[in-house]
Amino acid sequence: MLNYGLIFVVKIGFDMAKGKKVIFIDSTHPHLPQALERLGFVCESFPGYSRGDYLQIIGNYSGIIVRSGIEIDRELLSLAGKLEFIGRVGAGMENIDREYAESIGVHCLNAPEGNRDAVAEQAMGMLLMLMNKLLKADSEVRKGVWLREENRGVELKDKVIGIIGFGNTGSEFARRLMGFGVKIFAYDKYKTGYAPEYVQESDMETIFREADILSLHVPLAEDTHYLVNSGYLARFSKPVYLINTSRGKVVKTDDLVEGLKNGKVLGAALDVLEYEGLTFENIEWKEVPTAFKYLVDSDRVVLSPHIAGWTVESKFKLAHTLVEKIKRIYE
Image 1 (cartoon, helix red, strand yellow):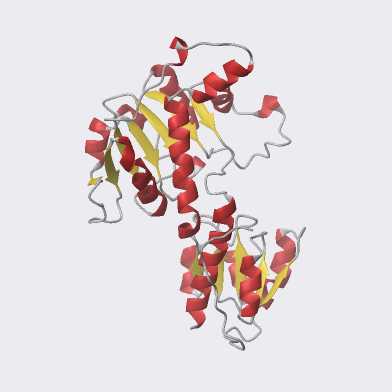
Image 2: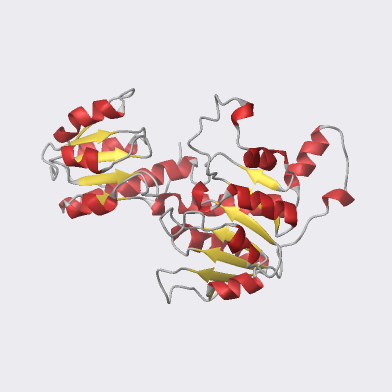
């Protein structure tokens, strides 16, 4: 049995929710519906329902729990007359019309605290894998190829890391870098005075000038869509390694590939891709974008299927975080 070091105390008879109904559009850790039911909510889910089905019934619910199953947009919200909260089992809120929801009094909750450790650890692992050429070396050894000089790695010590976005995952990634003897610069356009003693709060000009490694920890928004493009990459004084565990469309893949080809990008670790709308399990290879084919064929690129936040522990912690935030609405 997993021990998360957490103790839950539910006051018997504490019916703060008074039979209000919550619809689960995506699956979650069972702790979430179980805890909500103990608080008095009625939790329902309808596997296999389409968007049209949800539009028909959404008016019956006071809460929505969602990952990315459907868009919670103005059309749906306009039909949700009883809605009091939306809980996103994750960090990003791009599939929710948050501005409109909040304008009609709906609480919009997410749970970045729940998977920040998982994301930070994967970013660290992908970076080490990339700089030590472990993907290439592992593949070669499995084929009986034993090349040492060709797989000589690069050490992190004394490198400059630029972290873009210093929220939950950016700050946890910085914490994990502490023991590697690196210099950490952080840029966050939305706040100041946030950096701990082992991080230098920076501007982008300094990062463009100094960084050896760039790690992205920003939400997908109008100002971050294709943030990393050819013009952005051209501003770096040195060739850089790129890590993206944020959102796929923060990086313009065609321009990243061009950077890999012209030497502006030494290597890339990508947990997310701008092509995630494609159903990769069933796609015909001839339909795959040319830039993605280049990434797949490159031994300077490490790829994973948007799993940086997906650990056994984070699945539970995401659920628990939402429970605590929902409780605070009704206290």
